[in-house]
Length: 75
Image (cartoon, rainbow, N blue to C red; front, side, top):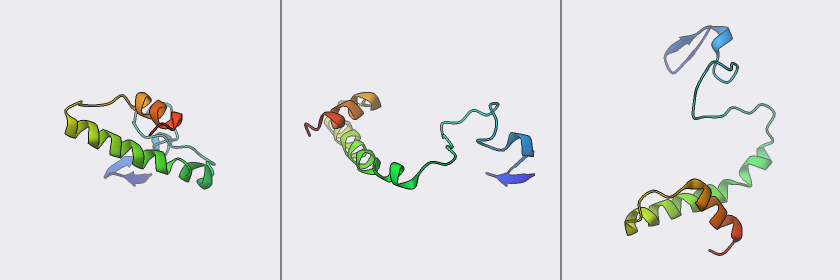
């Protein structure tokens, strides 16, 4: 048994190792670090866009719309 977030998880219920756990986080085994970090500039740009939208009164933006905007490169 291991401890995660002060919960004693039985081995068969370890986070990311079972289909019976719901989370907004995704654990991906064997993911290449370099493939992950290439997307970090997008995350920082998305955070900036969310901040600008909030200040302008537009409210929350759809993450898919933000991603599409950044992918088009018109920013």
